[in-house]
Length: 463
Image (tube, rainbow, N blue to C red):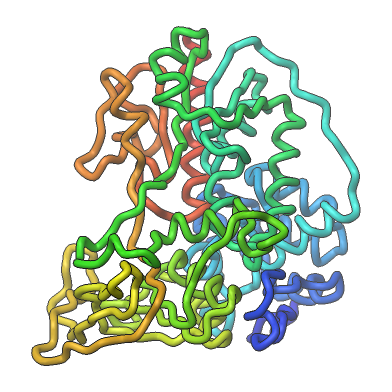
C-alpha cells in the first residue's frame, strides 16, 4: 500500500555547529527501514515522468519498487543498467531540478526522495556485497579517453562493457577529475569515488596518470599510436577571474586551486599531509554556484571566523542547489547578495587586507533569462577580509585543442561537438561534458559520456 505522506522521510545529518568544524560527510544516509518507508511513497506511475528527467535514464520506479520490497541488491543492479556511478549521483546530482522536479508526488507535497534512495542502494551494496564481475570479452579495438571525470568514467565503463580495450589518460596523479579535486569530502567522500573507479578498472579499463595530453601526447599522436577512437572529457579546469585591481595579491585564490589543495592534496589534514592552505579570519568567496558554496564551507571548516558569499544578483538567481545554500546558512556562512566586488585592497607587503564592493540592483533580464544586476549609485563600501576566493566559473584548458589539427572550438574555448553523439569536427574524436558545455553538473557530464560511448560503438563497427 502506498505511503501517502506529503513529506519525504528526513535524512539524518550532522549537527551544523559540529560539522562546520570537520570534513566528515554532512548527510548520514537512510537506514533500511527509512529507505523502505520512503520507497513506498512512489506511486509507480505508468508514464514514469521521472525517468525522462534523468540524463542517464535510470529506471527509477523499477529500482524504487525493489527497495520497497527490501530487494536492495536487485535495486542496485537495476540502477547500474544505465548509471555507472550511483553512489556519486545519489550525493551530488541535482535531483530537485531533474527527476524529482517532475515526480507526480511533487504536485501535492514533496517528491519521492529519489536521490536519497539511490544513495542508500549504492551504499548498501558497497557495504554488503563483495562481488567482482568478469572482464568482458575484448574485441581488440582500442579507445583512448582523455580525463577521468564523470563523463570519461561513464564513457569508459560503457565501452569496456561493449568489449573495447579502453585506456584513460589523466593529467593528475589521481584519477577522478572534479569528483576528486573539486567536491569536498563532506559532500562526497573520496573513498566512495575510489570504489566506483575500482569497479570500472575491474572491467579492464587501464588508467594512466600524470599524462598531460597536449604535452606527453597530442590527440593526433594517439591516433597514430593505434587508438581507433578518442573521447575527450577533460572538463573545464581553467579558472575565470574578474579582472579587477588586486587579484594578483597574496591571499587571492581561484576556487579551483583552493579546492584542489584541500581535496586532492588533503590540505584539510595538514600537517599530516604537507600541503597547507593559508587563510585569514575573514574570507570572501565571490560567486553563487555550488563551487562557491563548497569553497565557503571549506574555509569555515579550516578555521575562518567570518566567511562571506559575495554575489551580484539576488539569492533567487543563485545557481547553487537549494540544499547547498541551506547547509551553508546552517553552518554560519554570511550571504551578501546584490553585492559586487570592484577591487581588492592590499597591505604594503602584498597581502589582502580588504575588498571594495558596490551594491547592485536588478534591472532587465539578460541573455540567461536572469535580471541583469546594475550598480547602485553611491553604495560603495569596504569589507575587511584577508582571503578572497574567486568562484565565478571555469573554462577548458586550451592545451588539447591547440595541439590538435582540425578540431573546431567555440569562442570561449570549448570543443564543438554534436549534442546527441559527441562527434567533433575531426574524424574519430568525440567529446562531452564540461569541455563542450562549460561547467555543468556531474549527471549531465555522465549523460554526455553515455551518448558518446554509443556513438563510438556505432563508429567503430563501421571500420
